[in-house]
Image 1: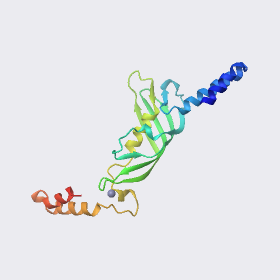
Image 2: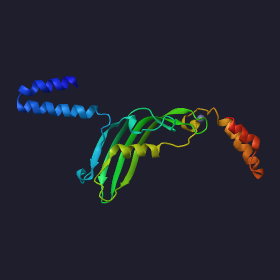
Image 3: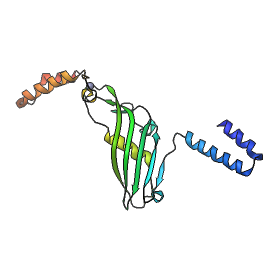
Length: 193
Ligand SMILES: [Zn+2]
């Protein structure tokens, strides 16, 4: 950045065309490094044939606690077509990104490569809404589409959940002891997990 400014200063004496070009470059550069820049799309700017946007957003758009069942592990990629209608914005395209998901049984985190290749959604517009933030739409879509409460052995082929056997035993004895409302010993075992 210091270099860019120095170049701009020395551009004082340069031709107006050259100066304008450098200023433009500096602006591009600044936009690119701003990590909190948002991608706001104005509805009036969406042409009748739609908009096509591709790019990536940093993992920081998720802003989740480290204890959350979803852990974003890197930038997420989007390739999205956007169409504006009277009261709704329609999106379709593909979303990709690396995550870790918490197993609902053993509570361990496992890698999960999200790849939603045939994704679509709608955004209902509020009265007088003039724009929307693309990051927010993409963020919500990942959270909605990622599998929830999955056991790690459903997620990873050939993997055995370290706590699966214990939980299966507990569920079985609870079922076989239905009339008394469950086997207290089994539930105690579950508590001890
Ligand atoms: Zn597990």
